[in-house]
Length: 105
Image (tube, rainbow, N blue to C red; front, side, top):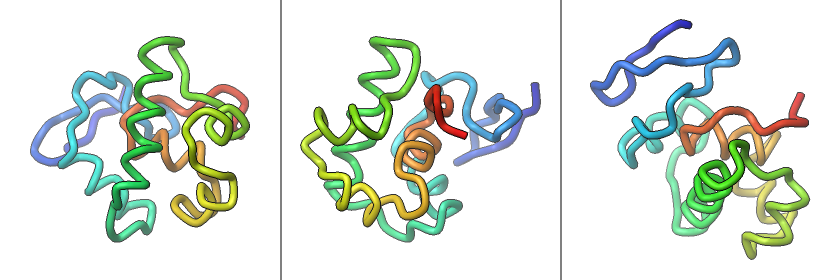
């Protein structure tokens, strides 16, 4: 497995570039990862999604689908696409330091 440095910490990444060990993640990493996804600033609404993604991952071993994310996070589909343009579930998972959700291409 490949490694990379994020916020001064060396982490393992999978073949898609997602962090392999979500326990190494921190807020400083989230800011850096967001910028890599062309999200210049993380707002409170971004963190609602990120925290929900991490909670679901810890409970189920994968991030939620976009449908579950919409229904249970309190963030509408329209807002999800505004916050994480071009693929909310994948981008939010990447920024949250979890693996790509099952079902994401």
